[in-house]
Image (cartoon, rainbow, N blue to C red; front, side, top):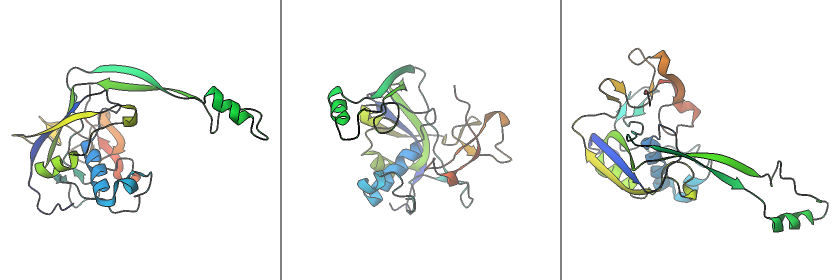
Length: 228
């Protein structure tokens, strides 16, 4: 992606959802954008394999940067802003071996039984917590057209998309009069690496500050927003 001629501006990005979503409170949009940008650059198959792109240069995003020139720079992109009405729910995902398949396995030479407490055929009954909202939104400072182009192919966000969660009905991107990508009325809108300006011991956590958020190099002590 060519980011040499960006036209950054304050924006509100909103995802209208058609299904409940499984995610944490942050649900960072720059992570979604980076995943899509990497798929565009290196191909969907390679970018989707776990650990496949660990040594591959990351694609720059069409977002303005804060702390440019430092090791703790980050994109001007807020955490998810949740609407007032949120419904919380719980379901379960399961893994079971069918009776017929278990009988086949047990008849294999030197088998005798199917071990379901551990190993390949272990049974699972795991809780899955989700949130139901009409939409999620973020405040960013970036290039509207380039962001819209990346989101064209994003039809799901959050975890367990293969099970129908986090389906996006449509994206909406609107210009904003004010830049709320990092702060709004003096309050943080995203995780910011601690500094003389941002240091609140009551709301400090070791956390990622730019995508990929799971990468150790992208994690440090940060001040985080006060969430509800």
